[in-house]
Image (cartoon, rainbow, N blue to C red; front, side, top):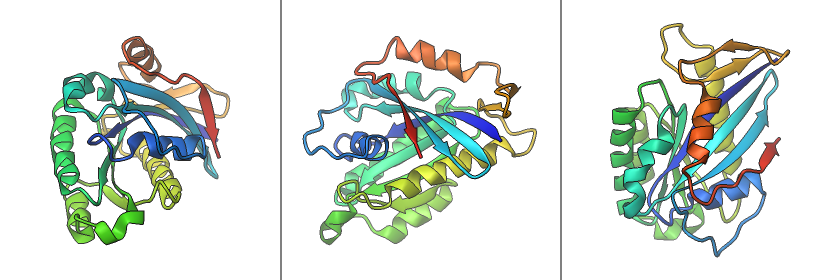
Length: 219
């Protein structure tokens, strides 16, 4: 069995449910009164698959415009990105496109992209068409999921998709540029990048705000 360790970033406008999505999956809880993320919050999460373990180093970035200039320091060397928007607010879907542009500008390696439309429980107030989202996801090489963090609908599928995506990336062509770290069952490293992810995380942990350092096991 191998362990794949990758850096995952959550990007999206303020209020779309990025932090709530993490809390729903990691802590199995939902809080209506979540304060806006300041800078970024950090989580770790290990997902056990049949033939591998996938460890996420998750950076939940702030959605406020005043923190946008700080975002590159968090998604540098990222291996996957959750691009989250609110299906009842069209402008949050539009803002995802600017995040994708930023990722392409700042991340050199191959990434797993997942477009996430949250607040499916408010489908009767929908302002973003599902077909438009699917077409956009296809155009950027992303998968698309609609979820309800409130009702815990579709959240697990998003994280599983990311874990399978990273696992596939780890076994891809040799010329694929990636900062993934891969270990065998003896915990010996069998693949590494020029800038080790563990060192990258330690650097970012010193500059992030509101960091949660407790590790979680997501099974």
